[in-house]
Length: 607
Image 1 (tube, rainbow, N blue to C red):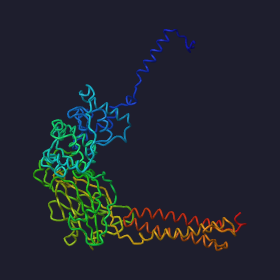
Image 2 (image 1 turned 135 degrees about the horizontal axis):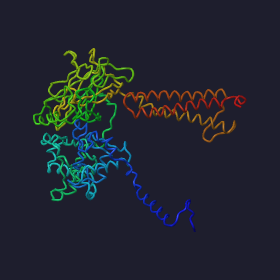
Image 3 (image 1 turned 90 degrees about the vertical axis):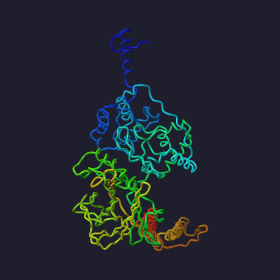
Image 4 (image 1 turned 180 degrees about the vertical axis):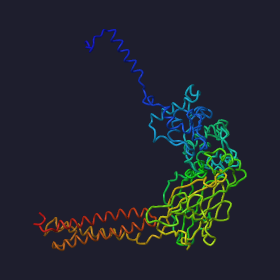
């Protein structure tokens, strides 16, 4: 068969054309990622922190501890390779995807496409000649053991025997005796990980990820590899898995869900707790409130030690008890942490006027409320209000005997109330690297500028915290946005008694409606099996059907009231299900009334 070409061509020209075409195909990238400009992506998204030359000296680097990665050193913390080895491409991609919890490095999986992230992996490797050799080989990890009580106990024994507590402390909160002296390979001060918050672990907080870190270490940090002591027979691989299980057990089972409302349960058989160790707190779910550095008002702070506080609340109808706890490895000012704090102050930017210049400040906690509640959702400015909308602040300091109640009209403007208007008390405890501060105050103090804490209504509430041994003071600390405190009220007995009554009445009206419908369907003289029927006039039928519909609507209104009581009392489950019942009742009632009206129309009118 001869192929007709659209232009004159002999065999040699055709062969040449074919060769050129095949060469062009060979030059086409086999991967879409190869078409992505990794350098341009890096300049756009990464250079601000890591620097245009990859040395970790971007314009924002001086606001961060730990410092951004210096890619020219090819020193990576999160790896599946042995300590001192290069990471695999998958290791680098994992950090790009997920970020580095506990640092300023975010995850990019929801921002950049797969092709763009792979192009970044390729580009990052161009900053170091070490990547020019053979691809690194990942370690082979054993399968995870079961997290039994015995495994956790074994892991705790390993934790003690290999002296993890020297850095991480006995309870894992980073308060070990070596903690104030730690620094990374670049000479910057570095904190020991808080093992009670696994969601901040570099590389992930699952048992498998913790085991991987124990096997590989975190290069560039004081965290070593444990592979050497496993290979030397000091501990077994199974014991290392036990250590991973123990470390994981120090954190909550689930990463805390950020909620907007802190519910204060109502105590009905006594008064609110007077100590942080009262057994009553064991029955109160702690709510996690995240905090971030205050970077709005100068002098700003980009390196807060307190990343979040746990909040619990109880009230007895007369008084509120608010328990706030957070990790802090030292009771500031602590002489053993003075050098650490001073180095943080000297290293951290941006050096705003009025910034701290010397260590030695106390730890502080502020809880703030508006001085008055608005009808809508309007709240004061979250940084302690402004001249138009002030806030009522409760301030505790580690160098003061009690809490101080103040009125603030902006950050740094708090004015303590007169001695006769001080109604807030504080009981505190610092132990095993944790602060617990218990505030107590009457719901209604009678003070002219004190907020009356209402029962059954959401009250805006916000937090600020300072760690003096991290160089924090003045405006330089951690802040939260507004959350809400809700003082629960007793749930009326009707909320629990009404459901069976409603179900019985619903069944009764339903049977009556079915009986009447069956009578109409079988004719005037028919009898429905096991349901004795009686003949009704159209007027009676209409009255009966409308009555059933009205009864259902009445029950819908009662159900809605029960739903409101459930929501107001903080019982979201009761509120939800009563809302569902109210909706079903309303639908049934309206359907009964509409159906009755149509069914009982005179025959000539219904045509």
